Length: 110
Image (cartoon, rainbow, N blue to C red; front, side, top):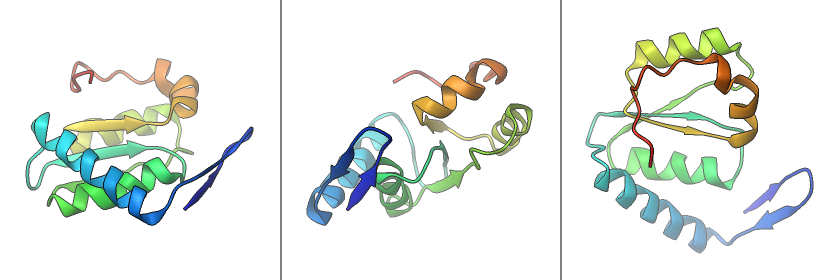
């Protein structure tokens, strides 16, 4: 599995990918994510995003992927409407839209 960044390439094996997805599922369970709860992602295609694609559905939660190309106001509306329990955000996206999105204490920091 290869992820290309602007300044580097990150390579992991599929065994590592599955192991990391299992750790992520355990973390989500520890913070209270249960069957049917929504987990939002605001991220580019990468190994980290793929880990979420594997972990969240495997624990019977719902993966809510948000298009990172939307305007901040539209993203905020989607987050408010979906009632997601957890939000995973790529740092580069958050630097662009984060100041314009009011999360209203919906999410806890972990």
